[in-house]
Amino acid sequence: MQRGRQVNAGDALFALENAREKHARDEAAQRLAQARSTLEDVKKGRRPTEIASLEAQLSQARAELDFSQKEYQREEGLVAGGAATSNALGALAPLLNTALQNDFKGPLAFLANTNGPIDLRVHALCNPEAVTQYNIVPGLLGVVLTMTMVLITAMAITRERERGTMENLLSMPTRPAEVLAGKIIP
Image (tube, rainbow, N blue to C red; front, top):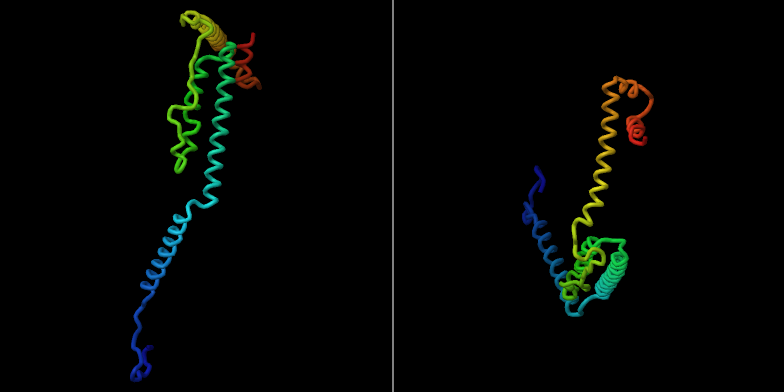
């Protein structure tokens, strides 16, 4: 009813808003329809798309396992030939143990293998007694040679600084990396 209009007998003076109740009723109807749909899916079993997705996950997990086993065999051959260390195999063990763990989730969780598909055993062919001197001495030689080169380069730069010729080097159009390369290479 608008202001200033004549009211006749039987006319409605106001109307209740039922939008909120209508929205709640519509929402409840949607939930009921969704629940009925879910019930039908449960009665039918898994849908073909879900089955196809799970089969794809399973085949991908098997491919990753196959790749991990081939990588392990390659690394084992390198260790046997002396081209790789046992640390390489040690880094490979967690990969093999978790190759399938990430893919077997949800309905495939019962397929997950807790111990891993491969048992790693390292046999030392060189230095089986594990005498550390045989491994440390060659590495120590490399460290000593590296430190010697660093010290010689530092002394050459210090000498340039003491003689006052470092400013001449810095004012030239060479980059600092080129100056250092010139001190290290000879």
